[in-house]
Image 1 (cartoon, helix red, strand yellow):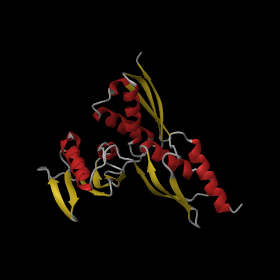
Image 2: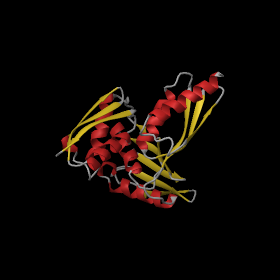
Image 3: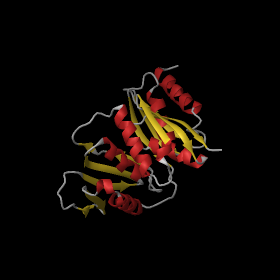
Length: 242
């Protein structure tokens, strides 16, 4: 069997073994370039399935890089303008970004949604294309970057979020930073009681422990953790109160 055929076979087998990806329900197209770069394209049911597919594919021997064309099936189909406006409004309403310049792209033109009086250096630019939200600019911490990304993911029409925000001053994406960012994102979700959840991170793998009130809260907390920039895996050990 040629090497490229064997690699593709291993990738597909890895995806099929992971039940959360549901490859038969959400098939992904897989293509391998001559330099070992693998392209994944299609839709997954949620952000967890998307990230797992990318991680599993990248772990197959012989893969030198991943081209990510995987999108998430949106909870609600929306036009790009609707998605952009929802993301803009969420960022405007979030106190953590009240001193951040916010610009949005509409009709090929950039418009300023907010320019703080203090003249702070932070800035976020929002654009949307075919349901994919792109965030560019500069924020002051990894937690702020992750929060902006989570707010974009929480818009029901979002199919993907490309978080290109730079962190200034530069911070390493350490386990402690991921834990802090995950905690902040959970705190901002009004449907989650973050005080009852313990978060630990090891090698970019986040573990959630504690008691929650329902299965839906348990699942939402996990999806929130998957939204955090830099998270490679989420282990959900949350228990529901009887």
